[in-house]
Image (tube, rainbow, N blue to C red; front, side, top):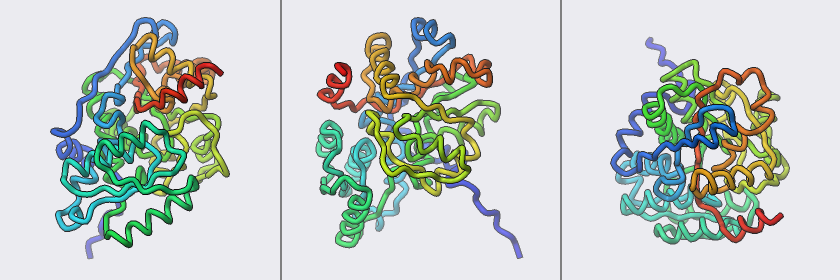
Length: 330
């Protein structure tokens, strides 16, 4: 009897390459920016992959687009549903609109206004929930029962992870000499895709996660060797408050070299540098990679001294300006 090889991870280089073929005509191939000023401040050559210029304003469109286009016609006809406070919600709404199917989006009442407006702009049907994960999940399952739609999780899904991994295919083509990529971490969909693709192309490349101190579950999980969740999170980076899933954790455990945690004030300072020097509007979650590369824990760690050419993923630019100005004034 033939023993079928068990697939160890939710995605791999072939599923990521397939995703790229599937979504290539829909996504933007985002530019890579560099700045002599930021190179001087950091003491390294930095290459910023601008996913803030992706459709929907964030990298999430890659995964959502791949997931929606992977559905067969019968599945797709009933639409898709998710619960999300932000960029995945907008991305899924846009991907569903491109395929001509309904998107039911369960949104917690505390979601950033600009992100909710994106969902509506792209034709997603907003269904409100309370802010707890329990409420989000119970409202989503009610919508599933009523509509028969397909649930597309924001990060714990192989199709989503494969879509996000297409960033590495582009970035390593644009800047082949990278020896390190710094990636924001939350639920782990982005970093899982990026790590699987990048390490397949260049096994020596370092993949570092950047995480807020007030939501440092990934750092704790890496230290403990199992998924740790927190009773609450407290960070200005609203996109980085989720916890690792059972599909993303094995990839983070096996392929992410370290997690660098930074304070909110460092994130806000990195946002300011992106505005003033790169001339790019970044949400807090998107600026955390720059905050990490400028942090003492990265700069003073001899392990990373040979990381000279560093890719930084600017993951999104959907920033609630009212909240932003308030955070600058603090």
